[in-house]
Amino acid sequence: MTDSAEDRKKEESDLAFKRLTYAVELFQNEVGRFWQRSLAFWGFVAAAFVAYGVFIDQHNLLALVIACFGLVCSVCWTLINRASRWHRDQMPRHGQMVDRTSAGSLRISGVVKIAPRAKAK
Image: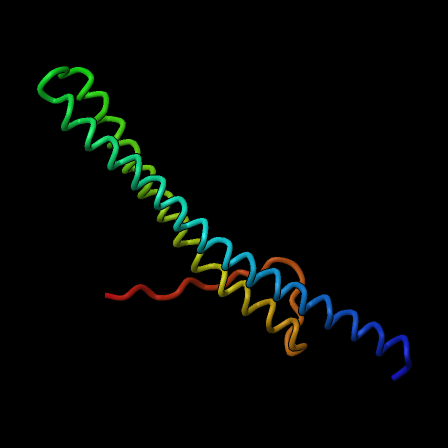
């Protein structure tokens, strides 16, 4: 091999390693954001529950509005958790794809569709 070919191969290897490092950092960041979002929504739902308990005897309309707010927060929390789970499941696959590229055993260019895993019965 010539020096330029070796240099190119080293640059590709360094770039692949940086991609792998970036994928791992993204995964760790997503896990941290998951817990931050969960804490925020838990706080909204708990505050709505307490406010509902305070206002149920005094102001029925306000209690209804607070209950609706708590319901909306709960539904949003559920949807965000589902999306976060999907993202959390995709990140290791992306990391494996980048890892294969960095190892040099598999060159992947473009979008790769990975078959979904089988659901447990």
